[in-house]
Length: 164
Ligand SMILES: [Zn+2]
Image (cartoon, rainbow, N blue to C red):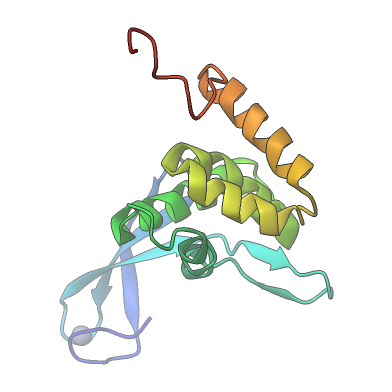
């Protein structure tokens, strides 16, 4: 690991410790030329296996890009998207696998996205699960209502109690 101060190519490890519940190792290094110290972090590479069989490194940015499209016009800011991507990565890493099929990344996105924004969730799910009919949406919406504990109240005419 090259020294970030003097660019010397050699350094020695003076301290290592596990962080993020053992999912990463942080090392304190000392440059053998200038003696300055810096920290490096080592994490397991999480590989995503695409349908074609090609693997690529898991990328939070890709998750953000995929979800951002579904969030157009919704009150979801970049911070929220970053947090969502972090939750997705943590949930995948917590399963302890080194490789994950790309469609399972989509699955891991669904839960946190549903908590973040229901409309964005429906958009994402419709593409991801290839909704092909109104019934697919109806079923998803009714599942969504059950999951969040909202009564399936009619959208219009429901506010008329006490009126007229
Ligand atoms: Zn140095």
